[in-house]
Length: 200
Ligand code: HEM
Image (cartoon, rainbow, N blue to C red; front, side, top):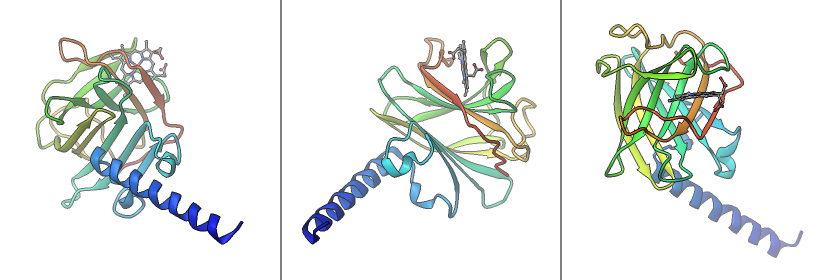
């Protein structure tokens, strides 16, 4: 390879990095802290390098050590895709797990909403959650992404359906439309992670 083509290649890589960093900062998820202050899960694996992530999750302990700060990012293929959700499961199947969903709202903001996947592939809202157990910290919604950062208690005390984050979970991710009653609709994309995750 000649020096000229090496310089050209370096230029292309630099531009790609700048574009990726810029689009990531707009979408809210900052990958530069991954492996440092927070743990990150990229779906598909290593997608952060090519900038083609469908989902990204991160988690880090809160200052007081009582909660985990969780980030949830989902790529949006169309305006109908209005939520990205994470399920705290004991297996790779949908059913019998609590779900935290980030739901797109107006003005580039999102809402945090908890529900439960019951047997029979049904998703039932858990209703408002006490802020001591979970609360939205920040959010960002663009044409191509939905993002939420929220704190979730490690040992929740106000709702027995919420997960205890000291246990290992097989995380499930899903995204899709929201029904007219505000509840999550059948996903257009979903998958289990292939490993167990213990956040706390
Ligand atoms: C109203 C909401 C939901 C409905 C009606 C629903 C329905 C279904 C149905 C019918 C299937 C099997 C066929 C298919 O793959 O589409 C399925 C699979 C799946 N769902 Fe859901 N789902 C809902 C919400 C969720 C949520 C919130 C998650 C996780 C955060 C999730 C995770 C999964 C996963 C990982 C699979 C594939 C594994 C399996 O078949 O069990 N689902 N869902």
